[in-house]
Picture 1 (cartoon, rainbow, N blue to C red):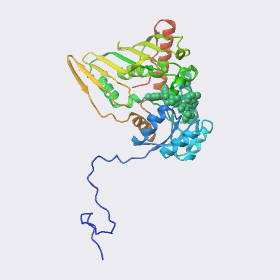
Picture 2 (picture 1 turned 135 degrees about the vertical axis):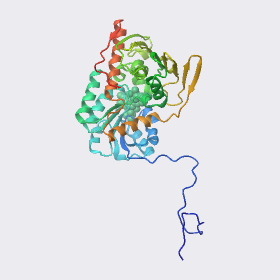
Picture 3 (picture 1 turned 90 degrees about the vertical axis):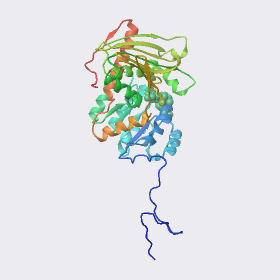
Picture 4 (picture 1 turned 90 degrees about the horizontal axis):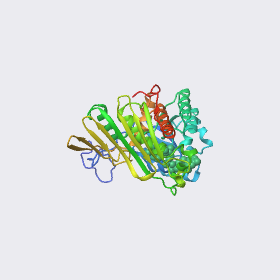
Length: 379
Ligand code: NDP
């Protein structure tokens, strides 16, 4: 007997398997993914495991295919949880063999700062593209070497400045650029937290040879980034003060509290701080001739808040949070596929390291330092 199946509208006789129409959806289905590039994550620490690796599930153009770790048991466990095959687990010695693995397109470096340069250069030598955590490296020379290695390998280098891929910060940048705040006169930004020696991730942060610097390198870089991406300008002068209690073992090698100021060509100023000994703050304030804006928290992983004040009127800006980690990984995957440059290339990371070095110098010498803008990235 032949049975008529008209787009599933006829009830199916019992015992006969048939397809049915798409049910009414209670929530939207995820967008069908296009091509995804394969990432190898290097260093399975707190940031990689809590933020980055879980965010692959929210990405459209990226997938986790390989792990690099000095702890094989941890790597095996992570691989099992996220469906990474065992043959794609490497350690720091076998890392260079990624050259023979076509599944890996991009290497994401999430190691202590002093190891960024070495693993970036080795990744380029293996023919891979690189996403590197902030700060890009410890010295200007390392940054130069990373950029050079990327050029020689004809591969992309992007610094993981997640705030530039985060919707609230992107909206603040748009408002500043499109003149909604008037002329930008002043940016203030504060990033602080308590450095805790009992937390493993804070232990290498107290060692200068691994961290490169203290609060300025680790989180002051967010304050600096904010001043640069909000104004869209490069500073021409920097001054700074640093205070650290040398009797506090946390600050035997690295700095604690930093206040620094930038002067921009337009005459805009930035008043910025970083701290390892104050209660947590992640705030950006922008003062324009027409309106001011407060992002607080500004550089959290989620739950950002933004207020815009014009005269006596204050309004809260709300928008979908998105996932800034997936967004930055997808950005690099897309520019690689389209053979374009990333929004936050190595040159952007290098610029920050130059400015941070100038802050140290200004604080050490007790006088402002003039900066050259000739090597500034274009925006
Ligand atoms: P963790 O200490 O938690 O992780 C670092 C990992 O690097 C370790 O787990 C280890 O991985 C590996 N590693 C290799 N050599 C060393 C070493 N000598 N000492 C310590 N670890 C080593 O640090 P975080 O995850 O907090 O930071 C890693 C990087 O990510 C830093 O550059 C930091 O600035 C950046 N970061 C960025 C954030 C952002 O918001 N963009 C937030 C937090 C960090 P394994 O055991 O697998 O070998």
